[in-house]
Length: 60
Image (cartoon, rainbow, N blue to C red; front, side, top):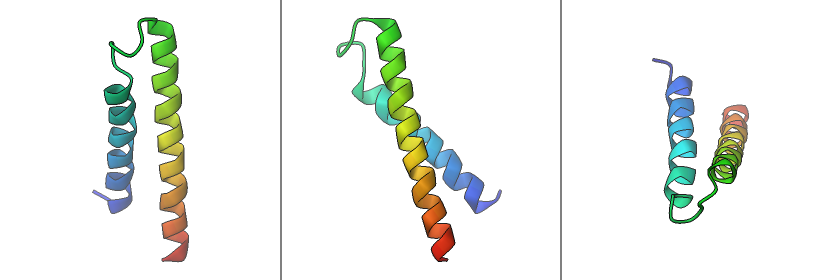
Protein backbone atom coordinates (compact mmCIF):
# COMPACT_ATOMS: atom_id res chain seq x y z
CA UNK A 1 0.00 0.00 0.00
CA UNK A 2 1.19 3.53 -0.71
CA UNK A 3 2.90 5.20 2.26
CA UNK A 4 0.74 8.27 1.86
CA UNK A 5 -2.45 6.23 2.20
CA UNK A 6 -1.11 4.54 5.32
CA UNK A 7 -0.33 7.95 6.84
CA UNK A 8 -3.83 9.23 6.05
CA UNK A 9 -5.38 6.05 7.48
CA UNK A 10 -3.36 6.49 10.68
CA UNK A 11 -4.35 10.16 10.81
CA UNK A 12 -8.04 9.25 10.40
CA UNK A 13 -7.82 6.64 13.15
CA UNK A 14 -6.06 9.11 15.43
CA UNK A 15 -8.57 11.87 14.72
CA UNK A 16 -11.50 9.61 15.61
CA UNK A 17 -9.87 8.01 18.65
CA UNK A 18 -8.88 11.19 20.51
CA UNK A 19 -12.35 12.84 20.59
CA UNK A 20 -13.93 9.50 21.52
CA UNK A 21 -11.62 9.09 24.49
CA UNK A 22 -11.82 12.69 25.67
CA UNK A 23 -15.53 13.34 25.14
CA UNK A 24 -17.08 10.25 26.72
CA UNK A 25 -20.47 9.53 28.31
CA UNK A 26 -19.44 10.93 31.69
CA UNK A 27 -18.46 14.23 30.13
CA UNK A 28 -21.72 14.97 28.26
CA UNK A 29 -25.24 13.66 28.57
CA UNK A 30 -26.83 15.26 25.47
CA UNK A 31 -26.19 12.84 22.59
CA UNK A 32 -26.65 15.41 19.82
CA UNK A 33 -24.21 17.85 21.36
CA UNK A 34 -21.74 15.04 22.07
CA UNK A 35 -21.90 13.88 18.44
CA UNK A 36 -21.43 17.46 17.21
CA UNK A 37 -18.40 18.15 19.41
CA UNK A 38 -16.78 14.80 18.59
CA UNK A 39 -17.30 15.42 14.88
CA UNK A 40 -15.98 18.96 15.08
CA UNK A 41 -12.92 17.93 17.09
CA UNK A 42 -12.21 14.97 14.80
CA UNK A 43 -12.51 17.11 11.69
CA UNK A 44 -10.21 19.74 13.19
CA UNK A 45 -7.54 17.17 14.04
CA UNK A 46 -7.84 15.54 10.61
CA UNK A 47 -7.70 18.84 8.71
CA UNK A 48 -4.68 20.05 10.68
CA UNK A 49 -2.94 16.71 10.14
CA UNK A 50 -3.52 16.89 6.39
CA UNK A 51 -2.10 20.41 6.38
CA UNK A 52 1.03 19.22 8.20
CA UNK A 53 1.42 16.22 5.88
CA UNK A 54 1.13 18.42 2.79
CA UNK A 55 3.79 20.80 4.19
CA UNK A 56 6.13 17.84 4.69
CA UNK A 57 5.41 16.67 1.15
CA UNK A 58 6.15 20.13 -0.29
CA UNK A 59 9.47 20.33 1.57
CA UNK A 60 10.60 16.86 0.49
